[in-house]
Each structure stands twice: as C-alpha cells, then as structure tokens.
Length: 221
Image (cartoon, rainbow, N blue to C red):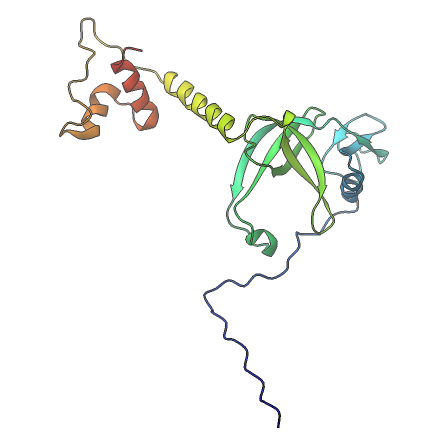
C-alpha cells in the first residue's frame, strides 16, 4: 500500500513571495535603435540628416524640422547631471522588489537631456558619461557612470560638506554693534540649552545654516 502524499507547507501570509519578473518591455519602434546600439556596445542617438539636430528620446520624425531622415550615429556620451531623485514606491513588480532606485536627468554635450539610471554615488552636478546597456527584457537603457571612473563615497562626501559650508557662509549675518562682546553668554552645555544659544548667537537664523554661522562668529571666523 502506498503512503499518502504529504500536504504542502503552509505559506506565511506576512512574508513576501518573490516571483521572476522582467523590466517593462513596452517600447516604440523607434526606440528599438537603442537596443541595437547597446547590443553593439555603442552609444548612438538619432541625428537628423536635414537640420543636423540630435534628439532623445527616439521618435519617428525630427522634433525640429519634422524630417523623417533620421540616422543612428555614435554620439559623444559626456554630460552633466542636472537633477536626481530616488524612487521609493513603484507599481511595477520588477522595480517594486528592487527599491529604492535612483534616476536622474543628464544634459548631454551633444544637446539633448536624457532621463537615465544613476550608478553608484553619481549625483547632481557630477560630470558623467552615459552608456547604453541591455536590461533583462532585452531593451536598451541609459546608465550614467562617473566620468573618468574616479571619485567615490569619500569624494562625494567632501563635495556635499563643501556645498553645505558654502551655503552656511553665504547666509546674511546681522550686524554686531561696535564694542559688543562677541563671546557667547551661554555655554553649549548650560541649563538654557541649545535654544538659548541659537537665539543669541544665531540672531533669528534657524536650522543648520544658522547654527554653523553662529559657531563661526563665536570662534572669530
């Protein structure tokens, strides 16, 4: 007599189950040129044979002169990141399993502005080179890589600290009367707390910028 089959294990309803997913594969016919260029290892965009305009995203006609004489040519991939954002919620199943996801807009030296994926610690204001890659769905996507391949988290941290320091120094400071005592009457660890220190030294400046400006004045910068 055969043994009965064992019932399957019960699934935990609170545990997320991962399923094989692919990136969105819907593309226009014109956008298939990106996949072809990515498969060849090239960075190519549409060039108008009549007016010479370089356009992105790919279209069936030139956005300037409406000509249909569009050729795919290798293009200079250098550019600068104009803006960046982090996606934390997505309705697409593929990206939902891989959040957060960073994307940004890049101003190409050739002219167009492209929306692309940001690699590593690439951020706003960085000089990058764009690369066309094939995703898991076989479609061409743009990835912004750091130009020259140098820099990293430490270098990016220094740039962020420099921008914040410059912003703090550019805050307009109130004029101090002649002969006034520049020393803070309340030490940082006094019972009055940080609010009293900021209200006197910051003179109405709030937030991190105001605190940094107050500390610089106290130290005689």
